[in-house]
Length: 114
Image 1 (cartoon, rainbow, N blue to C red):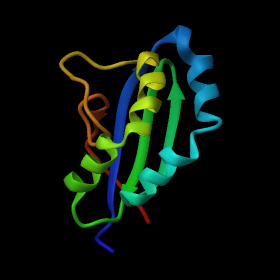
Image 2 (image 1 turned 135 degrees about the vertical axis):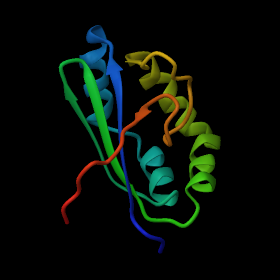
Image 3 (image 1 turned 45 degrees about the horizontal axis):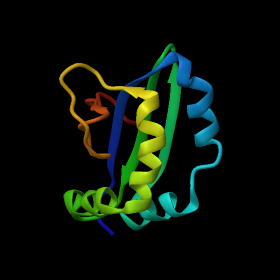
Image 4 (image 1 turned 60 degrees about the horizontal axis):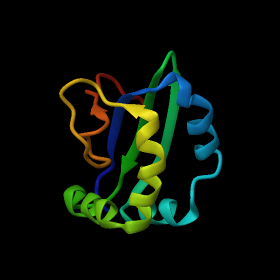
């Protein structure tokens, strides 16, 4: 197992899509979660406040880019994104991407306590 890397990301949630997004995440597809676990993503949480979504996850592998490429290549994950992406509004300058930041805007970690 590799070192733990922590990630925080933000994106806007379209106000009219709040209920839909919340409903989708109340029952995330098992195969989408399995693909994330296979890619060594753990402790994945998404929070909402004032039209912003904040995601936190930990990566415990050795090759983040390769593992995220596997997630991005997964057809079932693309089906999931086809439902969730229309609920989100990226910050200006961000293009559609994958979990490592492109669609979601990466944040700088300023403090962490174990």
